[in-house]
Image (cartoon, rainbow, N blue to C red; front, side, top):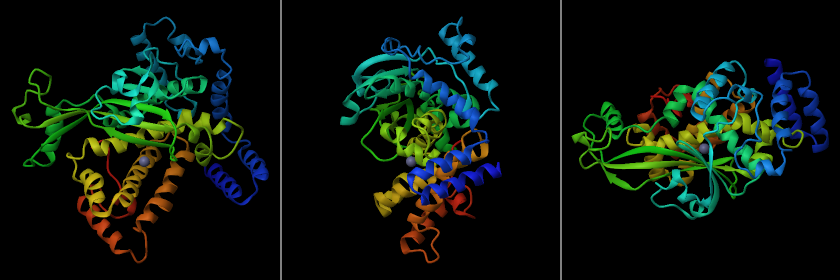
Length: 413
Ligand SMILES: [Zn+2]
């Protein structure tokens, strides 16, 4: 593995210093003979699917996105097929996520072309912005929706890729899946989490995440971005499960939607190549769909978690409220990115499965961009950096021996 990693970094160095024409040759020769063959076979299958006849695509049943394991679910009803899909993912536990073959979940249904805020899962959003009121092609299964601004082979492959990523997270990373995407907690259970940490704290609201939406669109620079959309404020309803607790009297409950935007032009172009290196057309995009997208869902899921649980954990309140109020939006954004990139990279460095290109990319961003911009590693830290460190050290949950410890939290706590 060391050889592979060093060959990759040599290739990256070459890519930075050489003209584009020579770079392609360098990368190809650096990859020859390593374990790219299996990964290439996995992405080749998906590239070939893009030749599907249009009449199959316009049926909007994702039936053209076939898998080599389709026979295993052919005779099963939808819910039984879903259970079988989880077993198929579990059987491939030892394979890199990039190579895991997952039949399309037939519970994913096309809801139509409609304003995003009228989609079943997003109707709870209290004050939808213009970007949610625009029409989208809406696909849904349970507590997940995928919205695409346009519709075609690439968009539908993206839809399948999101549900594949969720299935992989559920089976291969169950603790992370439960923490970020699990069933919404009953308000009394969320209140109990707050009480466990701060018995006497005055509690004014309870956040629950009732739906997750992924929107494929453009108009921004990053690979992805997110917004935690609040639902309407409501009072506890004793008739509802987990809401009869007298301690919930006077506490506002918010049923919220975690929205993630994925940058279409970015993942089909230079953003994906930043991660995977240059190569034949579609190579980086297909790898991203099968591998990097899993990290993206966790990464944006961590941003959502910070907001959902901001009144549960002191550190989260510091990240999303105290730091912005003290230092302004720019520093706050970098600080939050440092936490999220560090935690997400750490999850996959520890658990494995995701490409080293992906974890390496976020590890580098953490070290060379976020930490550097915050000035936390400076020999002579600025007053701002000293003040920021003091705020974070007071709330740190993992000690502050290193910057990796200081800018970290355990999402499963
Ligand atoms: Zn982020």
